Figure 1 (tube, one colour):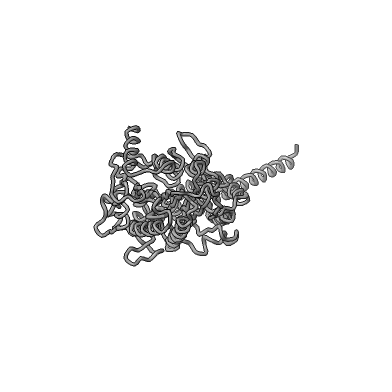
Figure 2: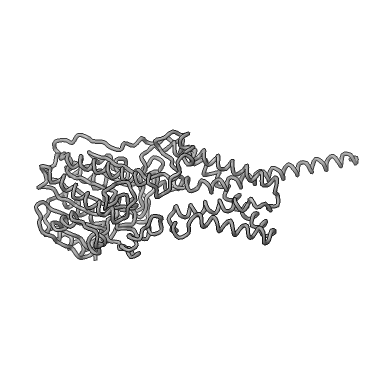
Amino acid sequence: MTVADTVEAQVRTDVQSTTSTSRQSQLTIWLEGCGAGILLMLQFAWVHISPVHEDLYHRLLPMNTVYGGIAIDLVIACLFCTGVFWLLKRFDPDGHTIWWVLIAAILLIEVYRIILHVGVWRADLVGILFLAFNCLVAFCALWVWNRPWYSKVVRWLRRGLALLGVCIFWMLPQLVYMAAHSEPHDVWKFVRAVPPARVPQRRVIWILFDELSQDQVFDHRQPDISLPQLDHFRSQSVLFSKVQPVGYFTEDVVPSLLLGKAVAGIRSDLSGNLSVKTSNQWQRFPAGGSLFANAQRDGWSTGVAGWYNPYCRTYGASLDWCAWTSRINILGNYSPDKSLWWNVKAPLTRPESRFSYYTLNMHAADYSDLMQWSHELIEDENIGFVLLHLPLPHPLGFYNRKTGQLGVPGTYLDDVVLTDRSLGQLMQWISETPLASKTTVIVCSDHSWRVPTWRTQGGWTKEEEGASGGKFDPRPVLMVHFPGEKTPEVVSKPFPALKEHDLTESLLHQPMTATGLKDWARGKATHLQ
């Protein structure tokens, strides 16, 4: 081999090495950009790509345009961040520029937004502007005080972003698949003809108020809160004063009550089909064993007007009348009712906070729809077994008890007052039906006021802090009113809320009196102890 050949081979090797190094550098920059893009989009994307698909379950499907919009926004965010890092790498390969101060502060704030979104920190304890200012000051001080340490911090930041960027290989394909996957087209309401054999001679109407507290309504009511309708209902009903909750979340409690088995978690497939965790095992929710299905087998017609849970999808085969709604705001202003390209632009067109007026209007609209449907369902006497699940007094407060206005900022106590007025309206409608004298009414709540949850969220008020004392009383409400009953009765022994399933089934099987119910409850309580 000549000297010229040796030199040529060495040059070729150097070129290949340089090319390989350049490709590795470009891949690293791309992964860093993807990591930063994921951080910018994670608060919008995670609720949809979470393996349990809980948000999907509670939505009126299809949601394809939302997933498509988020996927495209994720790509845009990653490309934008990759371009920024490429420019920084080209003009500042050693990580000395002060521009990293701004980038680090932005990414740290996004991490903080995610922490706030999952509810493990109170937004009012450390404000975002306060955090941003202190981040900028800290990074600037490090840049001025010790430039080599500043460069090391920048390198570790970029390495962390590159590791996070690897997640793009599963996040983006999942969003694309969800956008292309054929989802069912849910119906929000249907009414089926009831066969003559199932036209009822008596009725059981089960009213479920979401997050109503026994402690706040009856035991330690605030002095300025008047609840005449709840007091009147209590004066003619059996009150269970020590109900032991079956769960903490509505999505667990309602299936538990309808199934008669404790549900410790839920998840959904991409078609919105529910699976539940019972006895430490996951199974497809057996809707055929629910109270609705059992009631139909016993000759009852069934109907529900409900909130949050997709009643018409999950229990539709066992219902003759159904309507449901859940207008929970999608973070990022995405909307399943809009086109793909509208959703791509959604985060920039009208960014909405978790506690915005827009969200309160959504809650108010759900309430108004459900009261209208409840009226229709109560008037339809072809339906014997009725469940009404209302979004009251579930925070955030969307009612002002002083002005009577809906869709405005309020407190939990404001919503409790609206709960009282709503119960009065429901009972009036029931009293106007021909079967009123043969109607048993159950009033309950799925769980109590979850003070630990709402105290960590923005929007918590001094009134709510004073009313709760910062403490959580777990007892939900449970009362049963029998036709013609005029005197109050109390079951003071602990009563597992899960037994509301058996109680309802007993009421469906045969009429019962207040005395009979107290005897039944004592027997159940004794049996369980």
